[in-house]
Length: 242
Image 1 (spheres, rainbow, N blue to C red):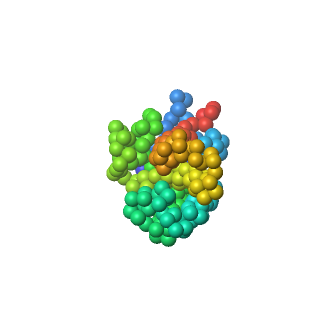
Image 2 (cartoon, helix red, strand yellow):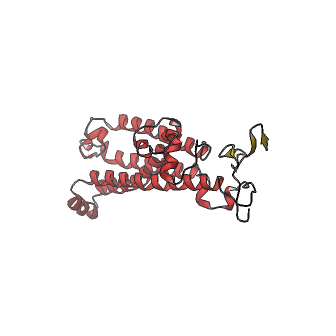
Image 3 (cartoon, rainbow, N blue to C red):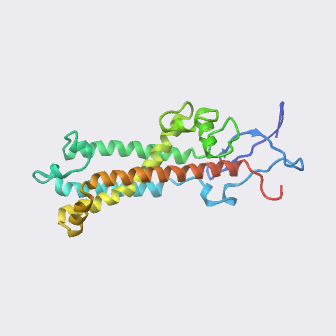
């Protein structure tokens, strides 16, 4: 492909949808002066394949439904709200049905962000060539290097992607934590001895669960960043022998 400014190679990845990832960028020549060829996503590594929407979305819906159901077993009983750990109830005094509505609204926002992240994975262009994951984040959200840490609380470009990344990570973390919440709720309802022992050891199980959720957010955020950066590298690296 040639333009008025010289040769340009579309070094992107063609996904199942037929669109290309990476966008038109100046062609890079190898030591032998040969333009680098396109790299197909599936020939590199499964870790660079665009994440699927349904597996985690279904797990999220099932575990959230299980959490609400198990919560209803004791919260709908007289005085049951006193044992609810959710801050919306313990701090703001929401009863069960307002709690359900708020959970549905928040879940819808997370599901949409997760879908957006998966649907646009790898389609955002960088204004430069990152040397590592930190520079990748900085170029992606600020257009220049040395700003990666600021992505923790603000961005200057690709705001929808930033929201999608957060929703994608939160979905995974909340799904795992919801399993613990369901087990804890059932232990409360059916008076499991193990539940009492754990409560005696942990004192405040809610703080432990939220701590686990926060740790999972960091874990899944790191994994997502590694996946994104590998996908970018795959889209901008020559195949062997070229």
